[in-house]
Image 1 (cartoon, rainbow, N blue to C red):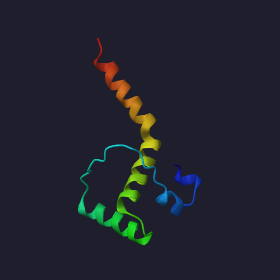
Image 2: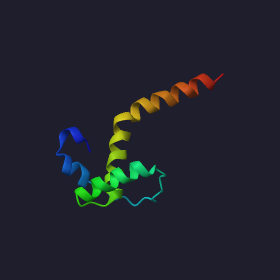
Image 3: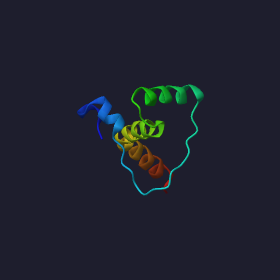
Length: 78
């Protein structure tokens, strides 16, 4: 899923349902209200919108995060 290569509405609607346990994420009221208004505007469940935004963020930053984790691990090794 890459928002730069597809229509914004298609990005929002895309949702990969996996047989995984769902977890709750605590977010601020203002952020929740924003996602709620976006979901209502596109007639989507709020969970789909938030899921897609988080998946996109993960894909964009996963490499950087792994590098940071490896640096932290290597500093702690003797």
